[in-house]
Image (cartoon, rainbow, N blue to C red; front, top):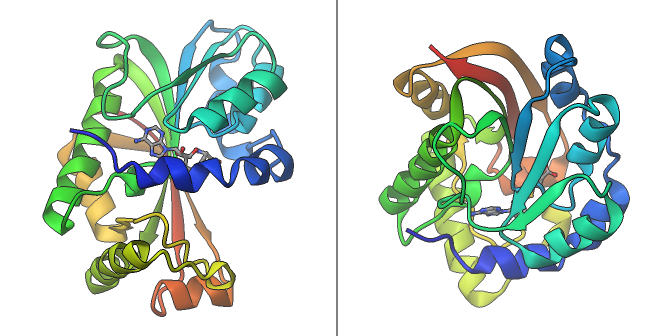
Length: 237
Ligand SMILES: C[S@@+](CC[C@H](N)C(=O)[O-])C[C@H]1O[C@@H](n2cnc3c(N)ncnc32)[C@H](O)[C@@H]1O
C-alpha cells in the first residue's frame, strides 16, 4: 500500500507557510505530556511538516528523544535546517514506518490520515485505517497518541468532498480562497466514523478538544458543514 504521490507535490509548494507562519508552541500537545515531563520518552510526530510542534516540545521537554517523519522531502529538508539539531527528522510514508513494533512511548499525528486516499471511497477508507494501524504498531503497549483529524458532520459531505477533490485534482483546479486545494485529494472522517474507529481499535479517550473553524471559505468547501478539528489524547484500553 502506498500514498497518493499528489500529496508530495501539493505540500512541496506549502513549505514556507509551515516554516514561517506556524508558531512552535502547540498547547494541546504540550499539555498532553505535562505529567510525564521528567521521563525520557521516545516521541514520533508523523507528518511533522517543518517540525514546528517538535521544536516546542524540545524546548519544554529537553529529556524527550524526538523524531519527525514526513512524506514530503522539502518539509524534512527545511525542518533539518531550522529546528533544533537534536530532533531526528526522516522522510517516509506513514503507511510503512521504519521502526520496530512498540518502539515509541508516544506518537503525535495531526491532520495526516485524511491524506491517505485511494481510487474510491472504499479503498480510501481502507488506507486510512491502515495508517491508523501502522501508528498503533510502533506504539508501546502503554503509549500515548496525540491526535488531530479534520471531521465533517455528514457522511454525504465526506463522500462528496472526496469525489470532488478527486475530480478537480485531475483538472488541476484549485480555489485557495474557498480552501479548495484540489491538487490534493482528501477523505475526511465524519465525527461518527472517527468515534467508531476509536472504539473499534479499543482506544480510550484521555483528553478531547474540539476546534471549530467558522470561516466562510471552509463552510463552502465542506458544503455547509463547518469543519471540526477533533483533538484527542488516546491510549489503549
Ligand atoms: C496538513 S499538513 C499537517 C502538518 C503538521 N502535522 C501540522 O499539524 O502542521 C500534512 C502533512 O502531512 C504530510 N503527509 C501527508 N501524507 C503523508 C504520509 N502518507 N506519510 C507521512 N506524511 C504525510 C505532508 O507532507 C504534510 O507535511
